[in-house]
Amino acid sequence: MDKQLATILFESLASGVRLDVFRLLVKHAPTGLVAGEISSLLALPPTNLSFHLKAMTHAGLVSVTQEGRYQRYRANLTVMQDLIVYLTAECCAGHPEQCFESQSTSVLSDTDTNPSPSDQIDSYL
Image (cartoon, rainbow, N blue to C red):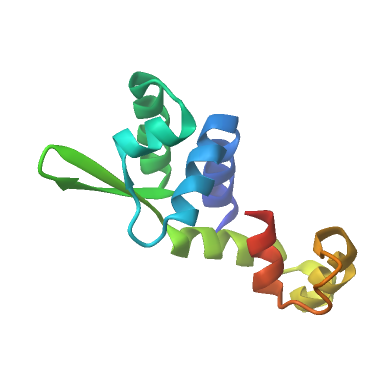
């Protein structure tokens, strides 16, 4: 991933509504949700949601497939993982796993003692 693509992805997620939609789609991966389900779960007007889904689709954060008269949206988990890798590539002198260890107290509950970096990332989602 290059800086330009990372910037486009961050710009797409800079809206609170888009971030909520993306997080919802990540939670419903890999099956995704149809637009009406997203609208209902987030209490968003369909026209407002359509605008945000179009922007996220254009950025590559979500994919859409036609299912009869419905459109099913899915989070592009590969792009999400690539963005995480891009962000952590230079972290802690080339050892990104150390970045998560140093942050462990802010993301752990009392019962978690040593989660993997992917578990810690999941806790942010």
